[in-house]
Image 1 (cartoon, rainbow, N blue to C red):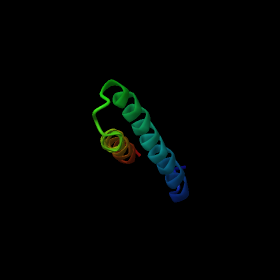
Image 2: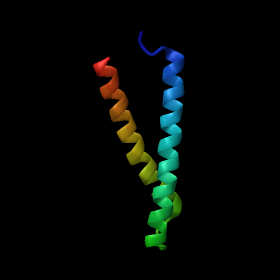
Image 3: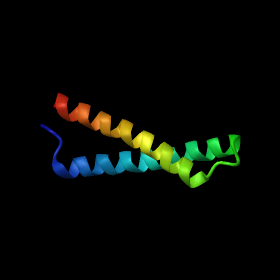
Image 4: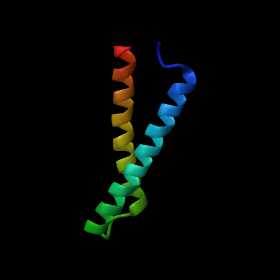
Length: 65
């Protein structure tokens, strides 16, 4: 019993939303510390970092299956 294609889409969507949501929260917190920085650039930066971690976890999970 493995994960089917639609299950991967659901899990991927949840991780995608989590990465963007987490990036938004981290950008908001960092913006409060450094008001001169651009919120949208911070959001893009933190979302990219979290997305890279998610991609790494997906790759490790796919290899171990």
